[in-house]
Image 1: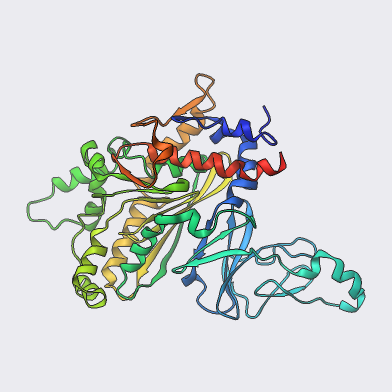
Image 2: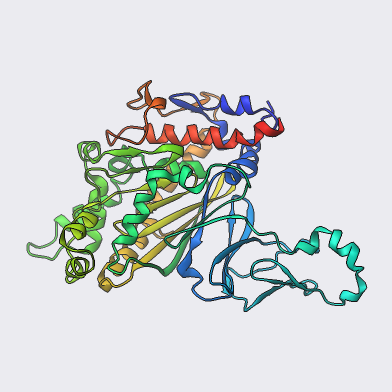
Length: 440
């Protein structure tokens, strides 16, 4: 069956409590995601602290589209398609840098302002000005028109039409608010670089896993469980290492995760850790609470730090951990290949020990050398291979399913419910087919 011009067939791949395996293994479905899903949704591009000065830029992708995030001369952050309008060459080849006041194409030296406008063409006298003005190239590098800077988190929507930023995210923005507010100065900075980890699986498996609370005590028993057992054998009175504080909650019993709770927001967003989380029992950091009270007052400071959400999914492809200041970006490369970027943030004005804890968590849990991350990677690889089996066609997400879910909005439910997964797949079907319908 071809899905390309058949939005009805694509929507049929998502049922109330199960999804078809083609979502994960079909190359045509993957192509439709790149063409429609990642163009119809507001996708994370980067953080403003990565481009603090005029001319600073990073290169990244939105789905399969190469883009540049750059600080323009007016101090605003712009997003440009990374393509010279002359011969199609990617203008910026480095992952980051400072381009000065303009970009210069490495092929024929056409130059463009940092808002994409055409600045100059070598030997311009060889072009008839009237003819050139009629050409698309005269408009310069194509800017992404829909860009939103929310507290230094930069998002864009490639399609000109669609839900507004506020409509798309709604109440889910409270997670970003909480993470930023954890800084006594209300500011974050990207710090510690980025960890990149190639996974041999579909990108949606990683998104699905972020709110799967029935796997940690099983998949991570061999890694986190071993670390905890080694600690338990340490001589009495040995200080508890920071690493053990971070490992131990992964093997909490089902009852812990049930009580933790999951909140389901509209448009595929949601988070684990409503009432409790694996980040709630970390040791206090000297001087931090005092700095927060001085900045916010005692009541507000305690309110901010008491919100210890676990994983927040911003659909389609990022996960944010506010209490530990990390962000994971799941970049699709093919139906069976995903690049995971794990970023860490400094709480400006907070003690350095908090950044040390954040960096340790990222290395222990998210790095290619992680003893925990490999547990998940092995499961993803087995899933990617297993889904090619002809034995069954559907993937089950029926745990604690309730038929009234479609009519209910922004609810907190049992922490082992798979409602958030169902929420993501329903959003997947809606945003993948939204612009397909226009061309069907």
